[in-house]
Image (cartoon, rainbow, N blue to C red; front, side, top):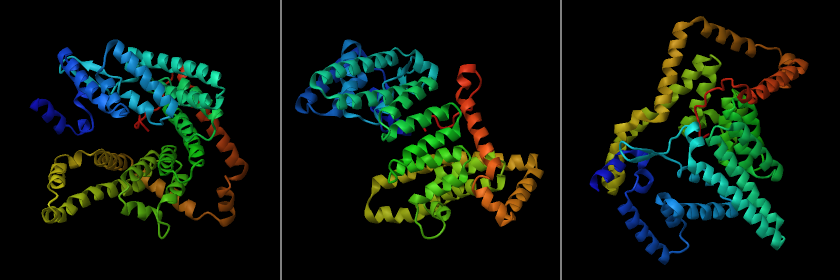
Length: 409
């Protein structure tokens, strides 16, 4: 209907999703859609998109059969993003507007019947493939299936908030295949959820070193390093993918790399270096001012090139320009920094004097500092590692774990 299409077009979050992923179907609508897609599937029997769409609105025994086939096919192929794809099938129905809500809490994920069904199907698929490959004497192929089953289980455990179980599955995956980058990423996510940010940074950095040309892992490692307040390591890693002439920080500013600037600013805010925090947060605010100014030239360009759809999209962008996540985060950091300086003006003086003392360190002491400060530095690193190991064990004692501002990270 027109109301449904308007509702989808108005929501930016729903643009990449089908109506069957958003709304709960009535029985008559389900039968009609199923008949249409089954006829299309006969013409295109190898289409994965059609099978995935049918799975999205199926129910009952058909849903169980299609789900098991879908899990088996993806485990055999080894799809890294399968966990994220499967998570879209978990939803809670909002009775008021008859829609599906997929942004669930860890407790809701844990209590979903679909989650238990998926975990059962994963074990069944692994057992079936083991028997099949044993008959063919293809142990190597079975190891590949078991590896991706462990990675998938790790992702599902993280969704349920069972981080220690996720850590065990990721460790098993690493032991089975030390060259699989995704296993290290899963381990890092589990450690991050447990509050051991420095251990998580080490884990994702270990995965990054397996493929130095992987830009995604480079960016992830940089983000995790900044979360652990290891700014020097983060700057070194991110500079591998920037232009080498000149300052990498200036190059990142020119590219308007807002995610990096915000993570860098947050790290300095946690260390109470409010001046450095404001520097990057105001840089992000400047990016959005540039976006608005650049649109002046875009008016004549769109008329000249007759790119009307892009022009309309650009005009609509103004409605939610300052509602963008990066802008809101930058504004929050700016306000927090100014309030912190107002509440404690002496902290700015203390931070400045500390930085001046670091700059005036004698060369002999600087050499020791770069090596970790001798015995003291090693003892400090060892104590820090012990503290983070304790943070992983917090879940057993029922203590509070630091909040995670990036649950998908």
